Figure 1 (tube, rainbow over the protein chains, first blue to last red):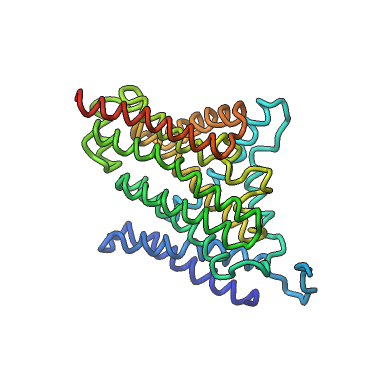
Figure 2: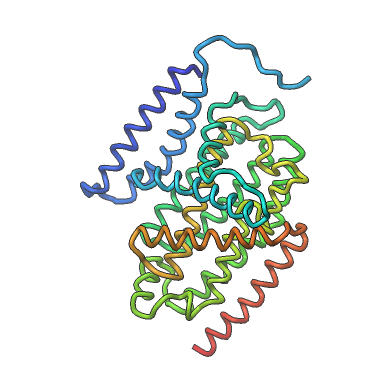
Length: 67
Length: 280
């Protein structure tokens, strides 16, 4: 995926996590729904964030992966 | 919950750094700065990342996400006062991720780590003793009930000390550089994590930071009770330093000895729990 795609995934998951953070204080029922959302979204957020700032903007060589 | 998970990741990484520092000082080395593991994770996240040709691609990536997810769930279970059985289920899933991590890479070192992960399933057996012992003493497996029990009867660390030892052994078996850390022994490079580099390794560091935070917090909640957050962190730090001492003084055991020792400890605890159950 391209850098922009990772950024979009990062932003979407960050928004979902932000909404889930407010879901508990306002008493969304059932209470386990925001928890499930966080458990499923947080790993995607972490990996997409890392992949976003890891991805290069410029064309590079293909890395050597062995013969 | 997310507002607590992010600080927990950083504190977990800081704990890993303190762990390394304490071990180094005991062994007469200066050791890395305590924030080294935070830098380490950031460094990995900036490193060039790809998927090895020999790897099973979906599993190779998915297993990192699953590792983060299960410890995020465990964080919620512990801090919402959930069931110990669910925490036990997380441990089982963690064992599967350890195994999958090694197998997915295709590297022989990773596979050795994965096989050792299966062999060291005995490290989970003392958790049976913890769960059974706590149930016999408190009559409940809900962490919220166990902390309430301790408000009335005092810390379980005092009047159920052998059970605390059981969980201590479980946590010790999950610490880096510990006597039971046979899945990441240096003779197999980094064991099951050998082929996970770059972003994937950074993700694993996040998962393991959460794991350390959750396990230390679970021990404090189960055997000392609910504390204000600063005392909780202090108790977790003291527990961590004691684990670091054990790791610094104890050489890594051979796989056979690690399994034998954990099984013997569980056997002794089983006798203690039967004694508790019979004698009341």
